[in-house]
Amino acid sequence: MAFMTNLFRSGLFAAAAAVALIPAARADDHMVVKESERGVIETIDTLQAALEEKGISIVARVDHQANAKKAGLDLPPTLLLIFGNPKLGTPLMLSNRQVGVDLPMKALAWEADGKVYLGYTHPEQLKERYDIDDKDEVFGKMTKALDGMTDKATKK
Image (cartoon, rainbow, N blue to C red; front, top):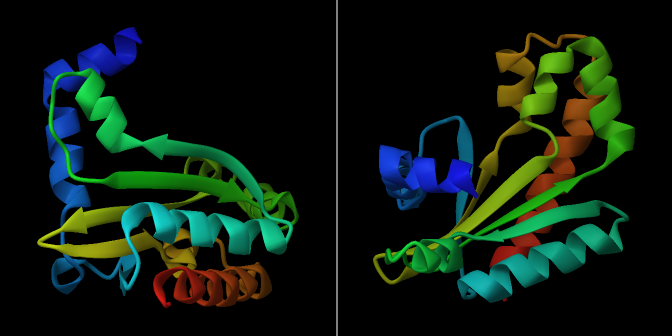
């Protein structure tokens, strides 16, 4: 709890919140951002159901809006879903243990300018960031799965 208090005081939370509100048009190549036809909660609920249907573990669900409210701050709806599949993540960590800082994977749904977005780090960015050149098949599976499940989450 002290960490969160210090995070809010340091202004890092405000910076993180500002990044989370970047609309799809301003997203950089490091993140895949899709506009959702659903609300924030429904987008994350649908993604969670799609992940669980494929046997992918849900590690945590973080309600940034609720946490901001507890700190006396306002933040539009913003939910983070943390999920993973050790059968895919472990081989990556065996190639470079540092990739574990970005695993399990995360998807963020947020509301900005009357629209809802869903974003996640593209697996190819992990490949490049951690110089993992011997697991193309794993990255391919991750990319295909994330694309399909996030499409399902964002389309009605």
